[in-house]
Image (cartoon, rainbow, N blue to C red; front, side, top):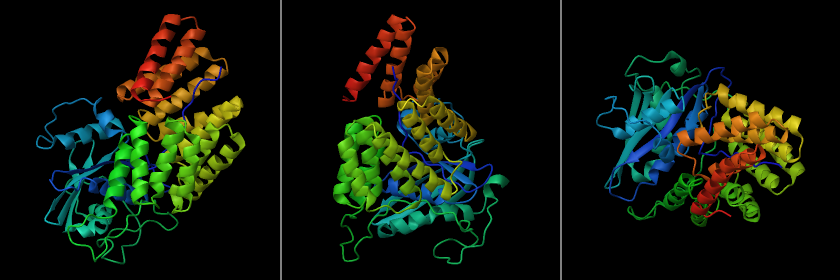
Length: 452
């Protein structure tokens, strides 16, 4: 019996892009908080995604975007360190950063009063909770995208507030030539390193009334809704992404995310193909194109079209190699998906090679306590079961389940798949009562998520 495996997807939920540096510095982009009363919460998504894309393009850095923050936070300890007695959100960010083994956390806040936008960003060390650098900027709300693009250059150009970490701050390259784009002294990305694509939002029409809604705001608001609920409520996530596309028809990232949810979470492969068709015409190249082909290969793999799936997945790997991203989580995700296709084709030796390489890469990157690592363990466990390695198979799948429990993600759609695999494994070994308990857990999770 072939057990169930899970394919991997990563766009803005998890990204790890860095130059050809042997030991990249990992940064967790935690996000920006908004405490105002105006309808401006959607701006947090724009600020976070711009910061993620900008840091990702800089030599020596790797970005660990915050996957399933709300659910991961539920697992974190709430120790009183006193470092952020007046800022519990920052204290939570610090603990989350340690959990994902990031060296720094990028977090901030913003306010909007009478059309005046003020943004404060901080680069915080996870080792001691001290702020390494901070940057403050302000302008009109119509300047949002320009202000967002100044955050990372502003942080890296700021004077260190504590003793600097030489490995993180030893940035090489010529100073910026245009002071309006980057503050003096901030190095540009190295030649040949492509800046990670980010969703583009339409500029506000100057003829609009000052208080008229930004035409891109609703699209980003729906997009943020979708990314927040991809695994906890896939039906709601798909609806959010599709609303984003109604507002902004060329929103390729929303279409790719929606295609992933439709195929991987809801088994609606026809809808996924339609959404990928919408995304194709608006791809910006770079890592976004690599993600597109990874999701396209995922959909074709679910449909049983192994040859076509491998073509797309290997194209994704080639694009990532061309970008210098062979030591990134994105590369590991494509390796895992190729392993899944070979597994379904019963080409077990090849499947094991790709799965082991994917697991080893995540371990090298310090991501062996992540949601995606749990997926890799489950997939290898399914493969080992097919190869007759029953004991080692149970070890891998149980390891995936325990990691999901630590991350408070056991009740996700992937959690139901892990329990289904454990039900089969324990039934095969004669532990029928355990098998029944896992089957009941599968029904419970899938019923709660309204999954077929």
